[in-house]
Image (cartoon, rainbow, N blue to C red):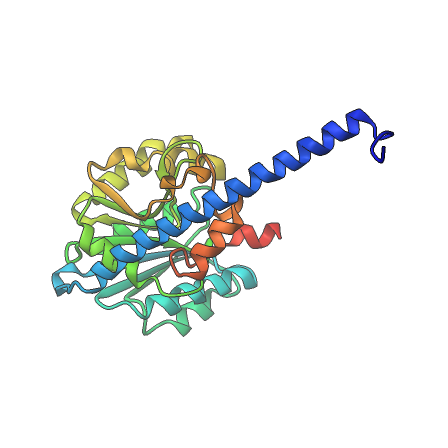
Length: 278
């Protein structure tokens, strides 16, 4: 026989590989379907929000935390400012690290875009101390929401929908996307807090300040615990509804889903860490 001399162990291995590939193809088809359903639901909700009008009383203060060091960070802040320029009824405050080569460029180029520009020393709290500094030094009573954004992302397309959702959902904290990596939380590169709840954010910052020594501490004590300080919450992109993303970071764990979300404008960001890895 043709297969008479085939090693039995090799044949079993070959069968296992074929079965594994078949299983993997079925899983991919399931991911595709779940992703399509997810995008359809998201698109339907986005259309509803687009058709809603907003009054000036829903004005939002946007606090941009940045560290204008190097070309990548400079591109990030430029992309953020570009797409913030499309949003109506917002005021922008920029808090940058002091004494950086590109600090004066940022201050001068976007002078007509912001209402306040600050520089403070860069520290171990990363963007959180800059956000805290801004809310301590800016009058926030005229704003319904405070939106926090940092320069850890490149923005590729409009983020107007996030601000529409923030106004429409009317919750204490509104995140861009959720995640179940380590524990359930909202990723902290972009989120909004109702101004009347801003004391909760300040309390969180001070509660854990003495425990912060590095980036991992910032994630563990600020990002992962932030939701505990707010009674009502929601987010735009509920990624935890996709099973395959369970306990994973969307930006690094599944390019099929991530790139589809980015291409369709639902997750129009690239994390700078992703670029550094590549």
